[in-house]
Length: 144
Image (cartoon, rainbow, N blue to C red; front, side, top):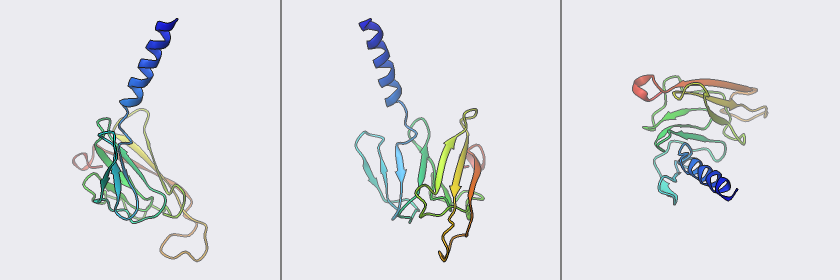
């Protein structure tokens, strides 16, 4: 019985430490954190200026693929992706952009955005609602 628990524990720990898709975080004021080496390393090359609501996604090696504030999606080179502007998210929503990998294809991702119903907030589409976008990482030379 101990051997079974030990093997189960080792397999869970191995799986936990091998998931690198959340190694790099970008958030407001062009800042970010890189957890690739265990301890967070500050980054200052991001393009997000939001104070809330942002998402980023890395590949299984921990290399950045893209990130978004729900309004714009940037590739790993910090350049706006093709058709990656005016996505309808509001940076003041608690999660204006949420990235979900496709369960059937490692190159396809879905970006869900949430707009605002707030009246008088300038610069953001009113009643933009809930939308989703498909990101294909095989396009544009692997930049999405």
